[in-house]
Picture 1 (cartoon, rainbow over the protein chains, first blue to last red):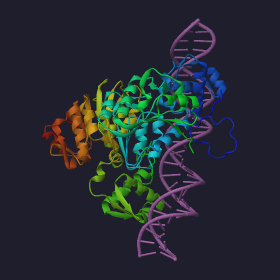
Picture 2 (tube, rainbow over the protein chains, first blue to last red):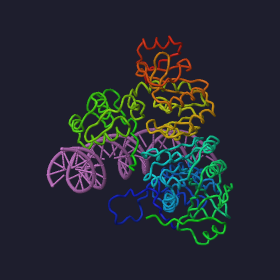
Picture 3 (cartoon, rainbow over the protein chains, first blue to last red):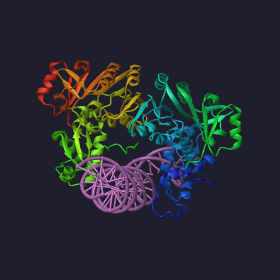
Picture 4 (cartoon, each protein chain N blue to C red):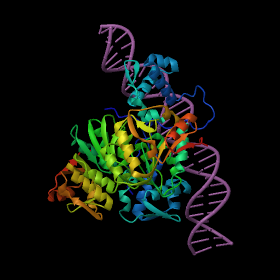
Length: 280
Length: 280
DNA sequence: TCGACTTAACAAAATCTCGTGTGACGAACA
DNA sequence: TGTTCGTCACACGAGATTTTGTTAAGTCGA
């Protein structure tokens, strides 16, 4: 399996830094591992999972119920089955625990593009949201987003001008979408926007959901400069709906784990690529 | 700058509904008392407060910092000074700890006016927000609001259709205001709206803030039926900006502690008044 | 109907959160 | 320049939340 445990939960250990070989395993981690297993093997039985993680079947059921609620998998009489490709990839809950380090690095790099006093637009991506802590250092800033989690985080920063784009709440993304949102964006203007997407191929950005595409497009249109935030995992995939050609973005920021051929492929399409150095 | 840690937590009292006379004194209560003291005496020293409540000076400092952040008072080298009159009255943090029981009762009563499947509009008042737990029982419902705290709470309810009105974030109210918000409301239509305000006299509702008035007016206009939620403390005050005449509301809901003369005064103005029974 | 899978309910355990104090350190006042 | 005030960093403990297992009572499919 070769799980690179990309510490989803921050260090909850505390004391005894010496040896932790196997069993910290909070429920969050376990669910992450279950997800990978199911995604990898197509389906796994609850019984199997129970033994594998050394927890009761009840606990496994609870995990599976939660993952099912998040839309990551389906469960039916003892077996967890992977969701048809793509549909789970746009879940906050799922996205939030994937490639955390890469996202942090990209976000940190992106934050440097924000001038003091600027108006900033963030989309409903976990990557864009990771910029926020960096933004805290340079108010007065205007930051707009349709991502509920980000709004909550922003609201706690002092001297920060926070704008909510309205819309209909979407559980899967924890964000506000729809006409209301699009209209709201249309009536504003931003210095810089940070947008992410789930897939990039052949000089185009893609996303598997229609209504998300509509919002992101409007975001790009409403900003003077617009940066696309990616991690390398996005570069090998495709998705249903075409978002925009990459040259519509002022720059595309990727993490340092991006393979060279992917980079040169991007550059072929006249895209200004920036590689974010590893987080320090 | 400094990132502010968590919101003031909501009721953490829990059990023991009977009597609390003197010494449980959570920080919330203590801050309430500090507020009263400062409001009453104009200014109080940290030293004084430390002795009066039997806590360390450090703790007093933390209290004062928090209250200052909430806009209730100012603090400078050991003394806390009252904020110019009125400005603190519209703070979430301040409002949230006043007349909790009355608000609960009013909210519970108001919730009965919501039909299953209805579209509901809530303003940025703590009273209106208290309706939410009752709403959880009857989805599918559409609920719109500009109150961030309420949005967060709503987002956790399953099968609930949640709509965010956009706008510029306002720390004092923990809500979104401004043109964006007004425009968003204007483009929608609701079955029922629940609105509160800070003062009622002479057949009119008042509020001390301009931009809030603008939003509330639009809310009333956008709803087929609209109910004004009050507790008795609002009936003896006035405020700067006139909101609307009371007969614009389908009904006015008050708590049972409302004095009789206040009730009859309301009825004189052709207002349909409903008295919410005490919470059970 | 049988046997598995599921869920509900309760209690125990692990964990996290919050409020608080202490002492060290820096900043402001006199 | 010394003294007082304010803040930071850490630790401790009570209380609340979350996580978990167990037992018992459903459900579903064959």
